[in-house]
Image (cartoon, rainbow, N blue to C red; front, top):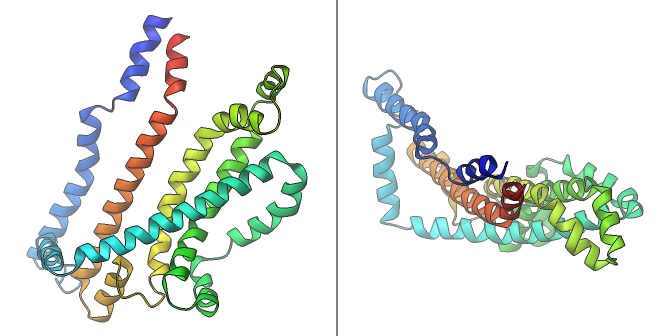
Length: 268
């Protein structure tokens, strides 16, 4: 059995080159199609710029202040995600471990989760002004709820037999949480973290509507106000790339943190 499982486990840990190749086909086809329909005058360039024109726009922005926009947005997302995810892990663990805390807090969080992101903008402006604090708070709100739900569900789904085994070995309180609950809930936690990070990038655009003078959300607004669809699409592409890069980093951390599951399966 070990000889059969070990190769399967090892191959699962190394994505094949063919998978990466197939993943590039749709974006490449989209680029070719966009270039074709614009160059053949099927779609006006004022509505859909050609990819080559978007590249020229990115070059133009890079020669000016593109790095400052990317840096401002990245710092906001990382700060908001760190704050929102940290609070979500703490509150989710509390609610998942204690029935009374769940009965007290969970209904309110479920109601707050249904509020659209843009609905927070006027309230945050009234409370916090137009500096960085409301922007980071907005992103933290977006990151909080998926991580909270994942931690809550992950702890609730922990096999009670594992808890009983831990108690048999004298574990209780913090040690029981650290040695049993958190390792067992890690897969759910990472799912929530990846979802929360993607929502942090989505909430960034709403956050940078709050009187931002730098950032990719600001570029989106600037492109709309100046009737520059090339700037709008360039900003969207950058948001997609940054979101993908950050998600890949978190996915790599997930694979390393959960490597013990693969080794356990290989031993079996």
